[in-house]
Image 1 (cartoon, rainbow, N blue to C red):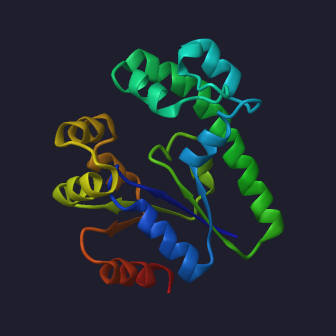
Image 2: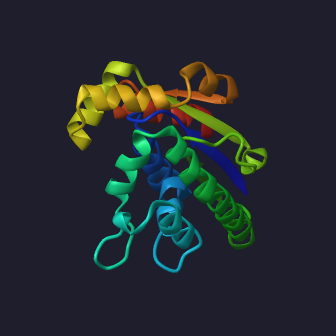
Amino acid sequence: MKIIGITGGVGSGKSEILNILKNDYQAKVIQSDHVAHELMVPGAKSYDAIVQAFGNEILNEDQTINRPILGEIVFHDETKLSLLNSITHKNVDEEILSRIDQFGKEEPEGLLVIESALLVGAGYEKRFDQLWYIYTREEVRYERLKASRGYSDEKIKQMIEKQQKEEEFKSMASNIIDNSGNLEDTKAQIIKILG
């Protein structure tokens, strides 16, 4: 089994890279954000602690967590963001480790890709064969986020400022993919690494 970690800032095009790896290399993909969302549904590992910490005002009528409301609460308050992270990160990390083990049993020769903005420090990065940083010029990131998510320049600026700095990402990476250009350029870089 080969494990690749994928990280990069918001708007860097990590999803595009994941699609290439799924479609062209038959990779199994685990996205930490998706795992976190799965663990926030009623009855799942993180749900009760989040509701207890943030109150019923974050709940929809069907008792599911309203993630946009929760996101607005934590985006503007570092203390509340730290509280949410203290609840979710451990559970997400445990779940990802469990899925790595399961994949290894089911597909010992397969390619597993784990995507997260916070890969290093979670514990499972020691199991990576490679860690890829997806670099994209800042102006391209702004264009993508405005087009795909409708974000304002101010919101994008705040999001980028809250993330790890580019130098930190690059210093951890075994490979840097420049995703500032077109899809064919990006694919060529992946082919150079994986064949």
